[in-house]
Image 1: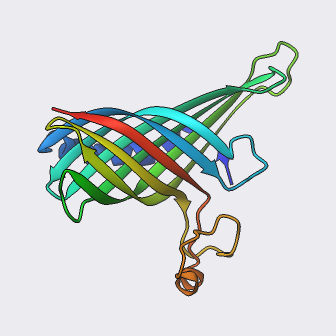
Image 2 (image 1 turned 90 degrees about the vertical axis):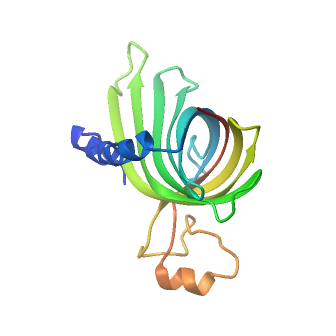
Length: 205
């Protein structure tokens, strides 16, 4: 469940960032990019069940077959009654693994994310006030990268978010639909609470 935001929830993302900084500084190639993300939640009744985010990222090619990514996305919406405004800010730190590097490369990814939402009243007579919630969770997925010359690349990937192992109900609406692995999925109680497509362009220096 969501919980009320407290300063200590920043400890996780800050710790991940501290671990990434030495690797980014020593990376063979550092890139900055922009991306868009189409996010699907596990609650079809929610107004955020399907939403588009835009964001920025840092990618560091730490070896011929590995890379690190730190990405931040943003979305702001206002309800139809114009009584409240919602801001969503997901931050994800990921490790990318490339089995084979070429002009067109496939990669596996996995990491941790911090998902912050702030809802604030904008109508003078609204009694909702301001609330903030934050969640942390793991993500994993598969992507592809197309090199655009020596200093740029286009990527597209699909990732499951808020992954759980050992949950109480692997057959819930959030269960990962991996064909042919139903028995394994049930044994591991492998589930998730959303998924997202991301695509973007990164320029390397």
